[in-house]
Amino acid sequence: MRHKKSVMLGAIAALACAHASAQPNDSGRAAFRAIYEEMVEIDSSPTTGSCTKVVRAAETRLKAAGFTAADYQVIIPPDRPDDGNIVARIKAANPTKKGVLMMGHIDVVDARREDWERDPFMLFEENGYFYGRGTADMKGQAAVWLDLMIRLKQEAGFKPPRDLVMALTCGEETSNRINGIDYILKNHKEWFDVAFALNEGAGGLLSDDGKALVMQIQAGEKIHQVFELEVTNPGGHSSRPTPDNAIYQLMAATNKVSAVSFPVQVTPVTREYFRVTGPILGGEIGNAMTAVAKNPEDQAALAVLLADPTYNASLHTTCVATQLDAGHAPNALPQRAKTTLSCRVMQGTTPEQVKDTLEQAIADPNVKVSIVRRRDGSSAPPLTDEIMGPVKSQAAKMWPGVPVAPIMIAGATDGRFLMNAGIPTYGLSGMFSKSGETNAHGLNEKLRVQSLYEGRDFLEAVVRAYVK
Ligand SMILES: [Zn+2]
Image (cartoon, rainbow, N blue to C red; front, side, top):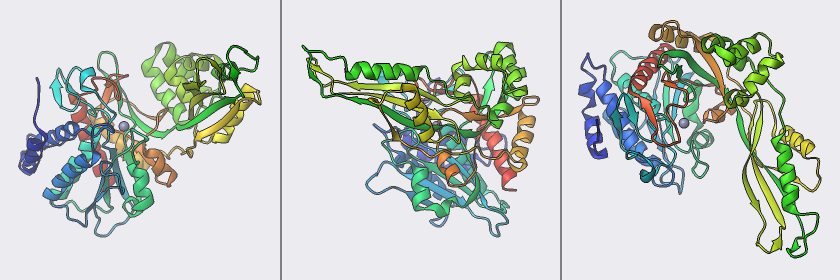
């Protein structure tokens, strides 16, 4: 079924949402869906879209729900009119502990209409899936946060003992935008005076036949650092080749990097993930997980996991060549040749340590190794009972018998900024999918309808427990 509505109509529907949420059999689902639809249908991609439009739509809804100027702030960095962010707060009258932050990025990866089967900036509900850019990453969760803030604000008797803060921010997906979380930390830190934050980063894994296998909570992530290998040379006429060719030297060095294997580190989070997930997955991979959980030095089992790109990424730092740039004319010896390396670095490993490893492997003084994007390392947040208690008990209610497993992700989220600012940040959504099913960042991104609604119920229960 094709489901289309203009953004304007979506906004009008939003103003009516207070009535929809009063219907007991609906639990406000229709109003929530309208928020989700509106968010997906506002293009917030870096090339053709605007985060600020999403922010203004959210602002309209917050105001309609009773949030006043003291309760929220639209934050637009100077000279960046499309990189808007919004923060809102339900304040505790007499706080007994620091608040809880619900964070979500509202920007999405570019999507071209001609490449997609359907308009990427239209919400389609078909065959049990929502299709559209951002349906999975992460306008679903952002819509959950906004919907929850609105409902709690309107709920008589909701008097939390701690602040509940929501931040919908821009710039997670791209480096050509100002990162909203980073910007707010630097310029409006007062909004982030919280004990911990809830973010994207994990959902739940479904089997091939659609059964819930494991529910995940993200605790920590690798750090993206970019390095460059560079060879320079006086060059000359290509009719007179010399042995010291910048391209050949760079190729040799790049090939040596391809053989580098950084030391394996089975972190406590990964070990726990293997312990819980191994028996569920079974087979060669599952058995190897179980073996490594028992003995992190089990080389045979590690070899099985290192052969799988996903588990390889979670077990050690990786560096991979992603770009090449060399020479300046077809008839000239190259004066410069450059390889870009994208390194995903384990927590606790410094850029200098990675650089040392690369230099030792290359062992050629003609090849200059440099750090072109330095990022500080974040650590893994503690999985305390305060955090895990509500997650486990709600998961047990909704998905009986399905274990909860912590994961460290190989990608990166905005959580790293908060972690570096001393705010433990956890990724969880309760939204299940098969491995790779959502195709986030790719074509025809989608999310199961059931997963979105279950995630909403799950996150609401967990947040209510945290702010009780
Ligand atoms: Zn995301």
